[in-house]
Length: 66
Length: 258
Image 1 (cartoon, rainbow over the protein chains, first blue to last red):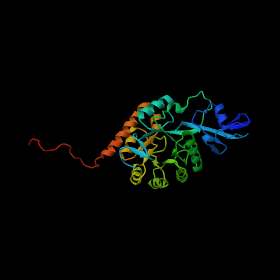
Image 2: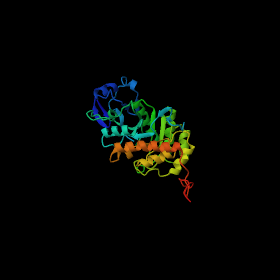
Image 3: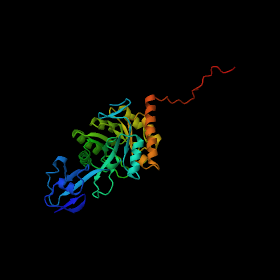
């Protein structure tokens, strides 16, 4: 199925969870925040949140800034 | 709480009164050295999309979290809703509830939108955040932010990145006279003397980024800023002499030959 990930279309497995997506992206160990559509997903819910086709996923972290 | 030799913000103690941004350095390694030279204990960061290309270096590889606390900002946010959203995302990333709250009202000056800033401050304070709002040098508005529960107020010295120094020291002085929470001069510093001036006036701290990152030698400028902050603070604690229009001899006339 297709999702929008950080502004780009991405093909992922049907029924993939947030946790599995982070594994696939090798981001699991990193400090990130995940937003699915308009909801911020808490860390403890990564394993239970299943992505749906067409979901907009944003994965954010700390970058340089003043 | 204000005054005393150690700066306390929301119960957290800082030995250094200099806060430094992590943007605009030539490279991460220069930033790392500049942060060390500045003596800072808290650095600002932004919340942005993660780089999905994992071969690239990440900012956090260069920030020793045992040495520095992170102060996430909401730079680039133009509404209270957006700033609240970014603060919550930052809390998820960093597992810290501190935020340098910026709600910008105008792209060219990057001056804050007070109405939205106050609205966001109230929401975030209620949500348990330690809110450090970046505001303009308006004493009335600084008081409103304090009353809304801001842990510190951060009036600008001059527009972000402008290097113009403290453009309205009289307003900053009025803010300092009235504030019960720490006052951190945020933005506008161009060189070391600007930082000293803010500290001599009794500011509790100074936050800067471009003045260090954009200097020809950021590491050397970071050291200059550390010394300027320390010198300014010491001068404030020492209590300067009043200004007079006429001379007052340092050497006595007594004992001169007739």
